[in-house]
Length: 81
Ligand SMILES: [Zn+2]
Image (cartoon, rainbow, N blue to C red; front, side):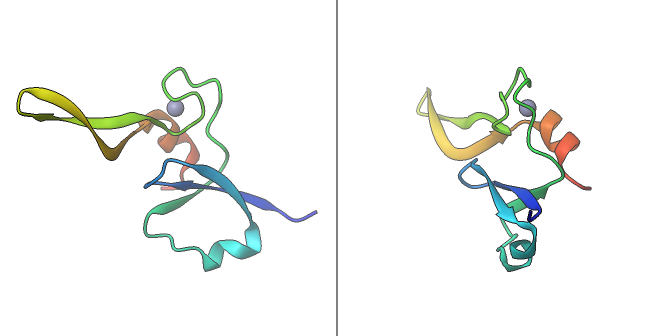
């Protein structure tokens, strides 16, 4: 059986798996290879690796941006420094 790696896209917030051989072909600018998947038991992100979208204040009202608010607890645990 081939070894699978979990990859987290910092743009879309998706976590997906690729074969270990394929990792070298990835564009790693905005993607991180994880040591292990984000734990589903995380109370902040529920295994997604991000908590939600960042908000910014526009004309006195908060608007959601496309920028993700990452779960630092999980990133620390699952990402090689
Ligand atoms: Zn988390």
